[in-house]
Image (tube, rainbow, N blue to C red; front, side, top):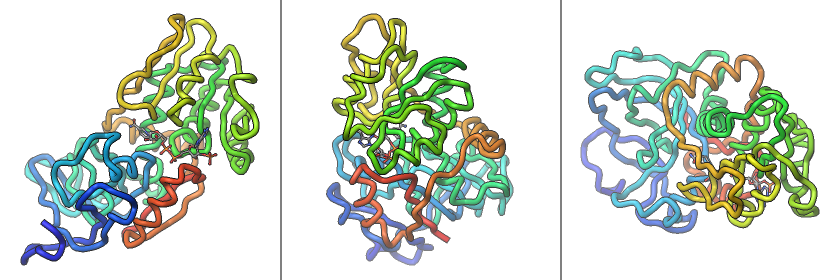
Amino acid sequence: MVGAEIGDEEKMKASYFEQHGGPEVLTYGDLPDPEPAAGEVIVDIHAASVNGADWKVRAGGTYGEIESFPYILGRDFSGVVATLGEGAGDFAVGDPVFGVCERGQEGTYAEKIAMDQALCASKPDSMPHIDAACLSLTGLTAIISVEETLQLKAGEKILIQGGAGGVASFAIELAKHIGAHVITTCSARNMDYVRGLGADEVIDYGAQDFTEIVTDCDAVFETVGGDVTLKSFSVLKPGGRLAAIASGMQAPPSPRDDVESLRPAVGRDRKYMERIVKLYEAGVVHTQPVTVYSLENAVETHRVSESRHLQGKLVFQVR
Ligand SMILES: NC(=O)c1ccc[n+]([C@@H]2O[C@H](COP(=O)([O-])OP(=O)(O)OC[C@H]3O[C@@H](n4cnc5c(N)ncnc54)[C@H](OP(=O)(O)O)[C@@H]3O)[C@@H](O)[C@H]2O)c1
């Protein structure tokens, strides 16, 4: 159903697309309000962030084709509970919540979303909606990758590829909190930014080849993809481990048999949101520089995101 064909039902504004393609396929218009299934709540979205995966879903291919259109992108949200579905008793109407949708059940580029209450967490007053939306998917990905998959320990040396990106920025702060020695790569214009996050060593990938500088790492967190993934295995010491999130859904094939290649399984549970709140309130992680857009400007946000050289986060302020 397209926006223009909607009948008398309640409508919300959303940014959606009806076929895969470039940023220009994103359309701003009316779609039907979501209905809560059992165990779901309707959230009035205040903020939703743009993630590096969104443009790949829009373009088609990387994460598979979408079968049902119109499709609303967006994985993380912060807002207020507006309606309770049957049996949804974890929250009350009016509670501020934030969280991340299941893969394939996106839809936060919109005024409302129906969410499984188990994927929502209470948003404290100390964390503004914009911060909560920006930190949720990046934060849970970094937490699962660094703490659960790599099991990074104090005193270990880690290379974090693509330090200026959303996930990697969170990972740098987390790895420093754990007590690791952090090396990261970024473009020249982002070097001061990643130093500010706490990185001990910063490599400008445009001027230097990290494989000629970095050796004997216990761990690599690879967020860039392509050739960078394969080359990153060379910096590991024997017994080292590499976790990759930008090279598909499987662990990348390793050219070495004395190191481990891992693909973090990124779950969406409430416990990860609660961990984000803890790290945020303790001052361990911070919201990155944020560029705020309205939903009408989704085409522009995707152009910036797809350029792959943003610093910090792009976020929609919805209300
Ligand atoms: N659940 C999951 O599995 C999951 C979740 C989130 C993200 N991801 C994936 O993880 C990747 C990162 O996501 P994100 O949201 O953090 O991305 P992002 O915020 O869009 O950041 C991309 C960053 O990559 C950097 N970059 C580009 N080329 C580079 C290179 N050759 N070497 C070093 N840095 C480079 C850019 O910084 P410069 O300007 O400094 O180049 C930019 O800041 C994406 O591929 C995304 O699909 C997976």
